[in-house]
Amino acid sequence: MTPKFTFQTRWSDFDPNRHLRHTAYNDYAAESRVRYLNEHGFTMKRFSKENIGPILFKEETTFYREVNMGEDITIELFLEGLSDNGERFKFLHKIFREDGVLAAEIIVLGAWLDLRIRKLTPPPADMVTTFKALTKSKNFEVIQIKSKT
Image 1 (cartoon, rainbow, N blue to C red):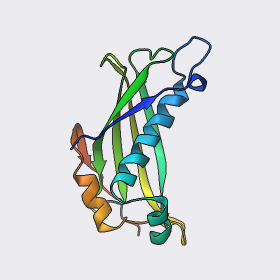
Image 2: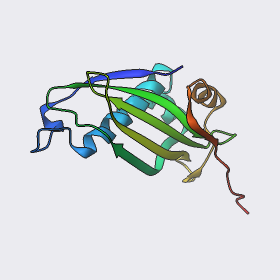
Image 3: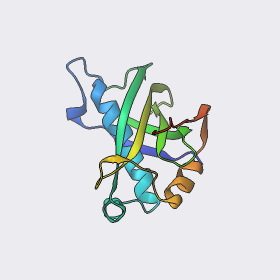
């Protein structure tokens, strides 16, 4: 499954060159991840119950084409990597302009944090299953976790 999310861009998302500012791409990518999780029952209430939260280690954006003022964008979300236990994840976001042209790609690498002990932890099994249901990118990798000894 490849989820798609369409966003109406806002005036405040644009820079003096009248194109989508660089950080707005990342904000919309984050919103697409949150929407995907919410649609599958992983709401803030659920995160609170599980006492976990996502953290990012790396966020990499590649820009291809401008998104002009007033254009809507669509984001497709792919699974770029996952550790066997789901503790670490990597997502690919493909951001398209209204005309279907690929404007940018964003890859995020992150993990789940146990908010009590402030250490990385696997998420609940149903969340791992939800991630595995995403379409894998062509560069999908199993993320190896180094031994904690």
